[in-house]
Image 1 (cartoon, one colour):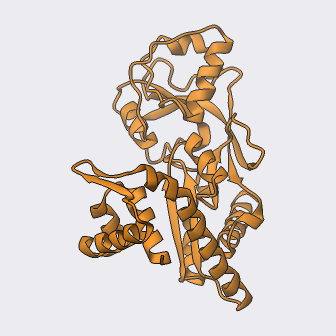
Image 2 (cartoon, rainbow, N blue to C red):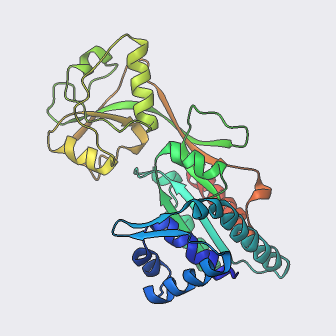
Image 3 (cartoon, rainbow, N blue to C red):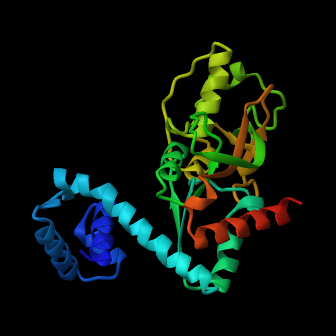
Length: 299
């Protein structure tokens, strides 16, 4: 069994199809299929059910999944350890983040640019997902760390380092009756058409909690899984929304106004990670560079 076969297996699992996996790893599909057929022959069983809906794991494939991930991670750690001794930096960095406009003071863009200039041999992968999934990815060791809101679900293996704290605010179209209000009572908000985040987003969790504390209910009629899309809808007068004050870019989204709440929930953004020893050299170096960049911007 070769490492490249394990990489091919995991690519198909993650992409859900041979076609997408082949495109991701820059192989022709026939070569990818041949590699996995050879792996199945060696293991003596089918790993995938191949059909019109894509590639689904068999029971044997599901049993092979975690050992395959562990083997690949062990190989990457071994390569990183050798490279570190030689004074080189290679390998990969996997970062989970939320699909929200992160404030510029703590975004990843400048760190990625500088890091790739210094270490062109490192593959950086940014994975957008919701906060619940980010915790699972970090806890399972599938990413090096996550830039995530603080979540209520505790984990003994998870560390959280706060980067910024900001109030939940109400975002309205300019000209709306609540636009620019200060110390709003949530009773004034629930009567409006609210564009909601889906369940699982920290902002939704905080907003729902604030309503529950006050014994308030609302009709949930519109959920959007994209912060830019939500702000665009507000901009066009579809409704109002709520979200972290620091993430509302009124320069980009003209035509929206911010209203503050009385006793607002506090939204925190930070770095979620496991023990440093569980990351490779590239992950440790990138996280150190990111922390330094954040300190520069917030000093």
